[in-house]
Image (cartoon, rainbow, N blue to C red; front, side):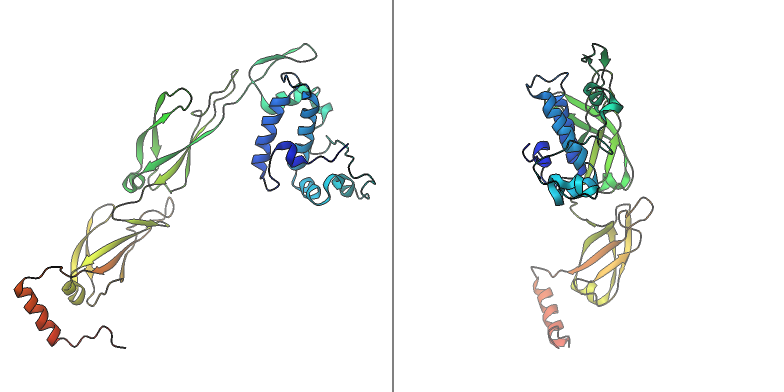
Length: 310
């Protein structure tokens, strides 16, 4: 028997994770199940796929296989690798599959996939298999205000196969975190043969805001000030997500200074509120009247301020 590459058999990369390996196995086991497959070598391929999955799904067995190839089992039992390393003993024991436990191959398939269509096995006994619907995931875009306030929102989904549009009402928790997945039970793919429908997962995405920048639950906003407000100090209006507040500007505030408003940001978690940081930006007038120009000249001649002094 020639060397069997279990990764090639399942059609996955050697770096594939457990979930990807399981998905690949289910797909191939369904394709090559002897009771329903029309492939000429279905039973052989089904056993081969089961063998590969029995090893790769187990963390310890997989590690030994990656290190010793098909000699992994001999090594695991404390034996020296067989002289002919190309020969493999198919192992359905331990954490793998046990044919005696499941009966015939149809029982194995039934136990793993619970399908919902009738099928006669080799014994002539009719079984009812149920197929669970697949889970779906869609991205849902919210404005910062919508995510902050939460509440009920209507989303529209279009079936790529039928083109039909579905309208769903979704309750979004206030302060939902970007990247969170909301589960809608039974709103995914339809099950077959009485099998349960899959779930629909909504991946939350918060769109960029025209005023605020969201960063790890804190909000950042640019605060433009006139030169005299920055130099003399002032009290200015500032809009937050909830209300307008009066913000006191300390005298001598230069561009880049950040003024912190505690608990006025977004949410870091369901109970912990973030802060709001107002970053000072000193703006100067682009056009001056004659009177304003004279005032600036007087200030220039009378001021001792030297911004480039060491």
